[in-house]
Image 1 (cartoon, each protein chain N blue to C red):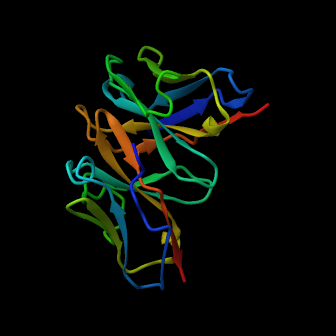
Image 2 (image 1 turned 90 degrees about the horizontal axis):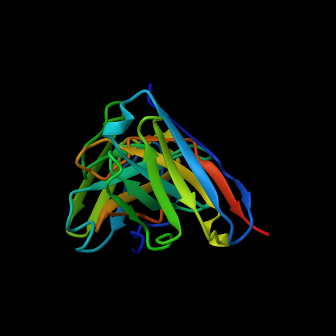
Length: 110
Length: 121
Protein backbone atom coordinates (compact mmCIF):
# COMPACT_ATOMS: atom_id res chain seq x y z
CA UNK A 1 0.00 0.00 0.00
CA UNK A 2 2.36 2.71 -1.24
CA UNK A 3 1.26 6.29 -1.64
CA UNK A 4 0.65 7.61 -5.11
CA UNK A 5 3.40 9.89 -6.42
CA UNK A 6 2.73 13.60 -6.81
CA UNK A 7 5.13 16.51 -7.25
CA UNK A 8 5.79 18.19 -3.94
CA UNK A 9 5.04 21.63 -5.32
CA UNK A 10 3.84 23.45 -8.39
CA UNK A 11 3.39 27.15 -9.01
CA UNK A 12 1.83 29.48 -11.51
CA UNK A 13 0.81 33.06 -12.02
CA UNK A 14 -2.80 34.25 -11.99
CA UNK A 15 -4.54 33.36 -15.23
CA UNK A 16 -2.12 30.59 -16.11
CA UNK A 17 -2.88 26.88 -16.43
CA UNK A 18 -1.14 24.30 -14.27
CA UNK A 19 -1.27 20.51 -14.16
CA UNK A 20 -0.61 18.25 -11.20
CA UNK A 21 0.30 14.65 -11.94
CA UNK A 22 -0.47 11.58 -9.86
CA UNK A 23 1.39 8.38 -10.69
CA UNK A 24 0.38 4.99 -9.44
CA UNK A 25 0.60 1.53 -10.92
CA UNK A 26 -1.33 -0.92 -13.06
CA UNK A 27 -2.89 -2.21 -9.83
CA UNK A 28 -4.54 1.04 -8.84
CA UNK A 29 -4.64 4.18 -11.00
CA UNK A 30 -4.14 2.19 -14.19
CA UNK A 31 -6.71 -0.46 -13.37
CA UNK A 32 -9.68 1.51 -12.05
CA UNK A 33 -11.43 4.68 -13.15
CA UNK A 34 -11.73 5.60 -9.48
CA UNK A 35 -9.35 8.52 -9.19
CA UNK A 36 -10.47 11.56 -7.23
CA UNK A 37 -8.85 14.86 -6.32
CA UNK A 38 -9.13 16.95 -3.15
CA UNK A 39 -8.25 20.53 -2.32
CA UNK A 40 -7.20 21.36 1.23
CA UNK A 41 -6.64 24.83 2.60
CA UNK A 42 -4.64 25.21 5.84
CA UNK A 43 -6.61 24.14 8.89
CA UNK A 44 -9.56 22.95 6.80
CA UNK A 45 -10.95 19.57 5.86
CA UNK A 46 -10.31 18.31 2.32
CA UNK A 47 -12.81 19.28 -0.37
CA UNK A 48 -13.74 17.04 -3.29
CA UNK A 49 -12.81 18.64 -6.62
CA UNK A 50 -12.90 15.74 -9.09
CA UNK A 51 -14.34 12.22 -8.81
CA UNK A 52 -14.07 9.15 -11.00
CA UNK A 53 -11.17 10.60 -13.02
CA UNK A 54 -12.98 13.53 -14.59
CA UNK A 55 -16.36 14.21 -12.97
CA UNK A 56 -16.76 17.62 -11.42
CA UNK A 57 -19.15 17.87 -8.45
CA UNK A 58 -21.81 20.52 -8.41
CA UNK A 59 -20.39 23.80 -7.19
CA UNK A 60 -16.81 23.16 -8.29
CA UNK A 61 -15.52 25.63 -10.85
CA UNK A 62 -15.19 24.38 -14.42
CA UNK A 63 -11.61 25.65 -14.28
CA UNK A 64 -10.83 22.31 -12.62
CA UNK A 65 -10.60 19.22 -14.81
CA UNK A 66 -9.24 15.70 -14.49
CA UNK A 67 -7.89 13.07 -16.83
CA UNK A 68 -5.99 9.81 -16.82
CA UNK A 69 -3.55 8.04 -19.11
CA UNK A 70 -2.26 4.58 -18.21
CA UNK A 71 -0.96 4.74 -14.63
CA UNK A 72 -0.95 8.52 -14.33
CA UNK A 73 -3.86 10.81 -13.50
CA UNK A 74 -3.77 14.56 -13.84
CA UNK A 75 -5.57 17.55 -12.37
CA UNK A 76 -5.57 20.68 -14.51
CA UNK A 77 -6.47 24.10 -13.17
CA UNK A 78 -6.98 26.78 -15.78
CA UNK A 79 -7.30 30.53 -15.22
CA UNK A 80 -5.37 30.23 -11.97
CA UNK A 81 -6.74 32.38 -9.14
CA UNK A 82 -5.31 33.35 -5.77
CA UNK A 83 -7.89 31.24 -3.93
CA UNK A 84 -6.64 28.13 -5.72
CA UNK A 85 -3.51 28.24 -3.57
CA UNK A 86 -3.80 25.11 -1.43
CA UNK A 87 -2.63 21.53 -1.07
CA UNK A 88 -4.01 19.04 -3.59
CA UNK A 89 -4.27 15.29 -3.12
CA UNK A 90 -5.10 12.56 -5.58
CA UNK A 91 -6.78 9.37 -4.46
CA UNK A 92 -7.40 6.00 -6.08
CA UNK A 93 -9.01 2.70 -5.26
CA UNK A 94 -6.14 0.36 -4.54
CA UNK A 95 -7.85 -2.99 -4.86
CA UNK A 96 -8.73 -5.36 -2.04
CA UNK A 97 -10.96 -2.79 -0.42
CA UNK A 98 -8.14 -0.32 0.11
CA UNK A 99 -7.75 3.31 -0.88
CA UNK A 100 -4.54 5.14 -1.70
CA UNK A 101 -3.82 8.84 -1.44
CA UNK A 102 -1.09 10.76 -3.15
CA UNK A 103 1.66 12.45 -1.19
CA UNK A 104 0.13 15.86 -1.84
CA UNK A 105 1.12 18.85 -3.95
CA UNK A 106 1.42 22.39 -2.66
CA UNK A 107 0.13 24.85 -5.24
CA UNK A 108 1.53 28.35 -5.00
CA UNK A 109 -0.06 31.19 -6.94
CA UNK A 110 2.69 33.68 -7.61
CA UNK B 1 -27.35 19.86 5.54
CA UNK B 2 -24.90 16.97 5.74
CA UNK B 3 -22.78 17.10 8.87
CA UNK B 4 -20.10 14.79 10.22
CA UNK B 5 -18.79 15.57 13.70
CA UNK B 6 -15.89 13.61 15.17
CA UNK B 7 -15.23 13.31 18.88
CA UNK B 8 -13.19 11.22 21.29
CA UNK B 9 -9.71 12.42 20.41
CA UNK B 10 -7.11 13.20 23.03
CA UNK B 11 -3.77 12.32 24.57
CA UNK B 12 -3.04 8.64 25.20
CA UNK B 13 0.09 6.75 26.20
CA UNK B 14 1.79 4.31 23.84
CA UNK B 15 0.08 0.95 24.06
CA UNK B 16 -3.16 2.55 25.15
CA UNK B 17 -6.61 2.62 23.57
CA UNK B 18 -9.03 5.27 22.35
CA UNK B 19 -12.39 5.21 20.61
CA UNK B 20 -13.33 7.87 18.11
CA UNK B 21 -16.94 8.63 17.20
CA UNK B 22 -18.37 10.37 14.18
CA UNK B 23 -21.94 11.63 14.52
CA UNK B 24 -23.72 11.94 11.19
CA UNK B 25 -26.74 14.06 10.35
CA UNK B 26 -28.54 15.49 7.35
CA UNK B 27 -28.62 12.26 5.34
CA UNK B 28 -29.73 8.64 5.61
CA UNK B 29 -26.62 7.34 7.35
CA UNK B 30 -27.59 3.68 7.04
CA UNK B 31 -27.32 3.74 3.23
CA UNK B 32 -23.77 5.03 2.92
CA UNK B 33 -20.34 3.47 3.16
CA UNK B 34 -18.13 5.39 5.59
CA UNK B 35 -14.39 5.80 5.99
CA UNK B 36 -11.71 7.03 8.36
CA UNK B 37 -8.79 9.01 6.95
CA UNK B 38 -5.93 10.41 9.02
CA UNK B 39 -3.43 13.21 8.60
CA UNK B 40 -0.34 13.95 10.60
CA UNK B 41 -0.29 17.75 11.03
CA UNK B 42 1.66 19.23 8.14
CA UNK B 43 1.71 15.92 6.26
CA UNK B 44 -0.47 14.12 3.75
CA UNK B 45 -3.76 12.24 3.90
CA UNK B 46 -3.69 8.53 4.65
CA UNK B 47 -6.66 6.21 4.33
CA UNK B 48 -7.31 4.12 7.44
CA UNK B 49 -10.47 2.05 7.10
CA UNK B 50 -13.88 1.62 5.47
CA UNK B 51 -17.18 0.02 6.42
CA UNK B 52 -20.16 -0.99 4.30
CA UNK B 53 -23.49 0.70 4.88
CA UNK B 54 -24.89 -2.25 6.84
CA UNK B 55 -21.62 -2.93 8.68
CA UNK B 56 -21.15 -6.34 7.05
CA UNK B 57 -17.83 -5.55 5.36
CA UNK B 58 -14.76 -3.74 6.60
CA UNK B 59 -11.25 -3.18 5.33
CA UNK B 60 -8.12 -1.61 6.77
CA UNK B 61 -4.77 -0.14 5.84
CA UNK B 62 -1.91 -2.52 6.60
CA UNK B 63 -0.52 -0.04 9.15
CA UNK B 64 -3.57 -0.41 11.44
CA UNK B 65 -4.79 -3.93 10.65
CA UNK B 66 -5.21 -5.99 13.81
CA UNK B 67 -5.10 -2.92 16.05
CA UNK B 68 -8.00 -0.74 14.84
CA UNK B 69 -11.64 -1.73 14.46
CA UNK B 70 -14.21 0.24 12.51
CA UNK B 71 -17.88 -0.16 13.37
CA UNK B 72 -21.15 1.69 13.11
CA UNK B 73 -24.50 2.03 14.85
CA UNK B 74 -27.06 2.90 12.21
CA UNK B 75 -29.74 3.43 14.82
CA UNK B 76 -27.60 6.15 16.40
CA UNK B 77 -26.24 7.49 13.08
CA UNK B 78 -22.73 7.07 14.43
CA UNK B 79 -19.47 5.72 13.06
CA UNK B 80 -16.72 4.48 15.38
CA UNK B 81 -13.03 3.72 15.29
CA UNK B 82 -11.68 1.65 18.16
CA UNK B 83 -7.93 2.11 18.33
CA UNK B 84 -5.87 -0.30 20.42
CA UNK B 85 -2.12 -0.80 20.94
CA UNK B 86 -1.56 2.79 19.93
CA UNK B 87 1.87 3.89 18.73
CA UNK B 88 3.52 7.28 18.40
CA UNK B 89 3.11 7.02 14.64
CA UNK B 90 -0.67 6.89 15.06
CA UNK B 91 -0.59 10.53 16.18
CA UNK B 92 -2.74 12.38 13.66
CA UNK B 93 -5.95 14.22 12.95
CA UNK B 94 -8.59 11.60 12.19
CA UNK B 95 -11.34 12.48 9.72
CA UNK B 96 -14.50 10.55 9.03
CA UNK B 97 -15.70 10.81 5.46
CA UNK B 98 -18.74 9.72 3.47
CA UNK B 99 -18.56 7.69 0.28
CA UNK B 100 -21.56 8.77 -1.80
CA UNK B 101 -22.24 5.61 -3.81
CA UNK B 102 -23.60 2.19 -2.95
CA UNK B 103 -21.99 0.00 -4.21
CA UNK B 104 -18.79 1.91 -3.82
CA UNK B 105 -17.18 4.58 -5.93
CA UNK B 106 -14.19 5.20 -3.69
CA UNK B 107 -14.34 8.94 -3.30
CA UNK B 108 -15.47 11.15 -0.44
CA UNK B 109 -18.00 13.91 -0.80
CA UNK B 110 -18.29 15.02 2.83
CA UNK B 111 -15.68 15.18 5.57
CA UNK B 112 -15.82 15.97 9.25
CA UNK B 113 -13.58 18.55 10.89
CA UNK B 114 -11.33 15.90 12.41
CA UNK B 115 -10.42 14.61 15.87
CA UNK B 116 -6.83 14.94 17.06
CA UNK B 117 -5.20 11.87 18.55
CA UNK B 118 -1.84 12.29 20.25
CA UNK B 119 0.10 9.22 21.36
CA UNK B 120 2.84 10.20 23.76
CA UNK B 121 4.20 9.34 27.18
